[in-house]
Length: 121
Image (cartoon, rainbow, N blue to C red; front, side, top):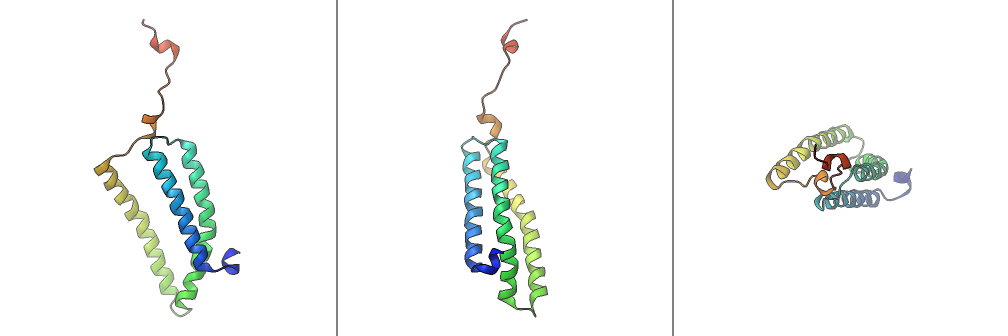
C-alpha cells in the first residue's frame, strides 16, 4: 500500500493536484465546446485511479493527526464535511451555470443530416 510506504502528506498533495488537473481538463474541454461522452468516461476513469490512492492515504493521515482518542470524532467530522460537499458543490455549480451559462456539448458537434432530409417532397 502506497500510504504505508511513502509520506502521506506528499501523496495527498499529489492526488489533489492530479484531481485538480483532471477537473481543469474537463472544464477546458467543456468551455471550448469540444466535450464528448468519451471525454467524460476517460476523465472519470482517471479520477477513479486518483481516488484509489487518495482515500487510504487520507484515512491513515487522519489517525496520525488526531490520535486514537479523538479518532471517532475526527471520522464523524470528516464524513459530515464530505457529504456536505456533495450537496453544496453541485448547488453552487447550478447557481453559476444559471448565472453565466454553459456551453452544451451538442452545440459544438456538427449536425448530421441524411441525404433524404434535404430533398423536397
